[in-house]
Length: 182
Ligand SMILES: [Zn+2]
Image 1: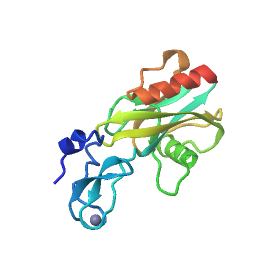
Image 2 (image 1 turned 120 degrees about the vertical axis):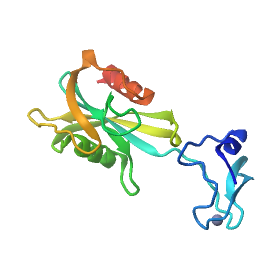
Image 3 (image 1 turned 60 degrees about the horizontal axis):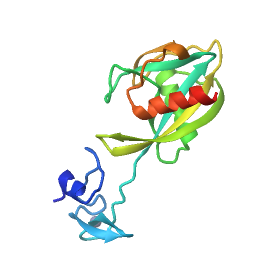
Image 4 (image 1 turned 135 degrees about the vertical axis):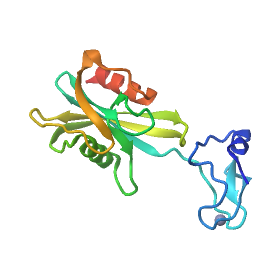
């Protein structure tokens, strides 16, 4: 049975939730074998290859004038800390759709203005090894009221001059890049 240590021995990065020991297709044991020039976990029975890819996450910078809307995280990781809204992209969903869905779920905001792609970052983490973080800036229409929902305990508008440090490096890079270019 493959363990996280076995993965690490081959230089494979995986996290708490994706160091598979068994094939998700047929349930047989995974073994290491070379595929496409790299050692990868492969099913010993059906030859399914486990390509370890980082899942995509969206990160939203909701802004109006010189203020950014942050949520107090209601779930781990970094529960209780102020951060940009965000979450995983679902299958069949475009990243921008995920951005607007997460914004709606966490802040109730639906009537929004301009949406701009800021940057795409990588974030290492315990759960999946790493994730790809897609950062968008979303202009909030004046008068639209945000209410905390879903994974948010609370929310508040922060002046761009008094933004707290983000609990994830990638979020920090995204908000700083937004401050640089917009
Ligand atoms: Zn299999």
